[in-house]
Length: 348
Image 1 (cartoon, rainbow, N blue to C red):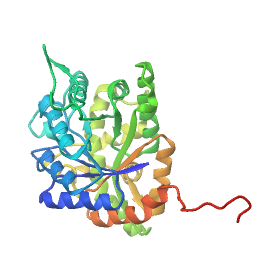
Image 2 (cartoon, one colour; image 1 turned 120 degrees about the vertical axis):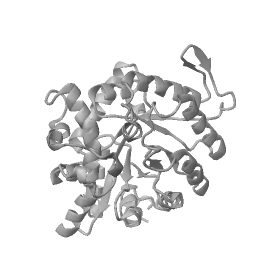
Image 3 (cartoon, rainbow, N blue to C red; image 1 turned 180 degrees about the vertical axis):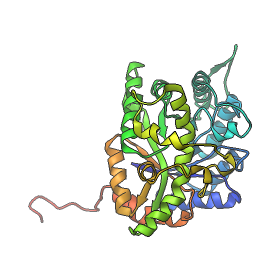
Image 4 (cartoon, rainbow, N blue to C red; image 1 turned 90 degrees about the vertical axis):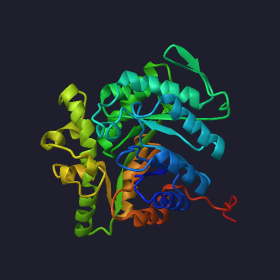
């Protein structure tokens, strides 16, 4: 399993770049960022500096959207970064949340999301794409390679992901919900005539490594409670559209009954007062909290469900400590032990 990192572009940008560089030294494979240009700094400018300061990590948004950026500009940006730094970008995309809601706009429709995925991927891979009545291409981008991963929760979004996406992003780490969403994405891929195994699966959630004490767990919960509030924005839409019960797991929908107003000025921040409706049980299921061994147990459970990457949301008060704990205690235990020599037959 790959281990990625999700950062906010909170100033100073130099701190974001340094956390990305540090993550690579600890063995993280991907560096993702929020893409919400009013709440935080512009991510694509920062990507160029992250790529310049690192050697191997893949970089991209978790997630962008089809509404705030022209699709051809998005594709051109990725293709330019690929030309500069050697095909080390990928595009995570969804319908849109904070980036559009802070402007008083609504998330894009699934039909628009589908069209944007196709345009961005074709142009980002040096091929032509139809935009309205015009066929366009980036004539200088023949060597660019770009995967487009779709984030979503609802049944129709999961079906779309299986039909057209290179990867799936689930922003929570609940094993039951993970199993349901992966099964739905794979079934949609198979119906579309695709090999389900070619769709990469990424689970993203806060991780907070503790010393195992009750006090430390209580603190970690408070630092990560915001995440349940953020997920609740999407879940509330699902409940409004599909209701409760049926095919959608109750673990995903029940907890939003107590949700009230949400202030995007506190979006993605520890201490968000509009996330107090989130119970401890949801934090424990949606996030990875506890000792390094606790983290490894959940990661192995997710891997057994088919998860290819776990991406750590790093929005709390232990950023550097979490990177260090993962780099020194978690990542090495995920990799099989390789030895320089092997015993010969007979044990000699």
